[in-house]
Length: 142
Image (cartoon, rainbow, N blue to C red; front, side, top):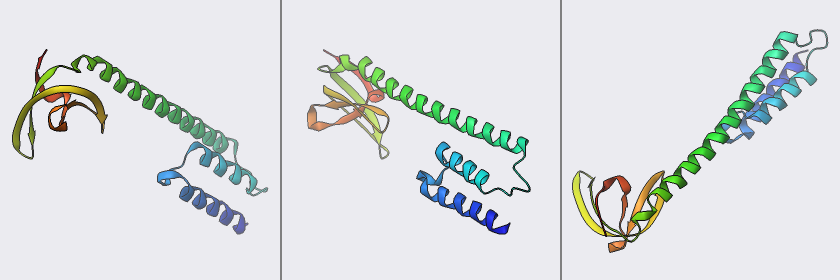
């Protein structure tokens, strides 16, 4: 009977190492559950309440995974919407001011493009290829 529990432990450890970020996904969870059922002691089978609890955990894990996917799609769409909202800045002269390394810097330039970098919307100016965050712009001219 001890060899059965050893097999279960080895299966769990192998699955943990295979997943990204050492996290257990829904596929790994299902594999563990199936392995546990295959290798259970026939004299002491898995109780109904334990099985129902594990299935509930699996269902919760699947729903959280779906929610995470949906949220990532939503965030991606929000970024595109923000980019479209600020597209009217292209071709306009902007004045900006921001603190960099404790020093207040300012300037102006014509916006030639907009881009996202590390989740931040940047205005790319024609002068010296400067990229400034949108929130540092304090004046817009034709």
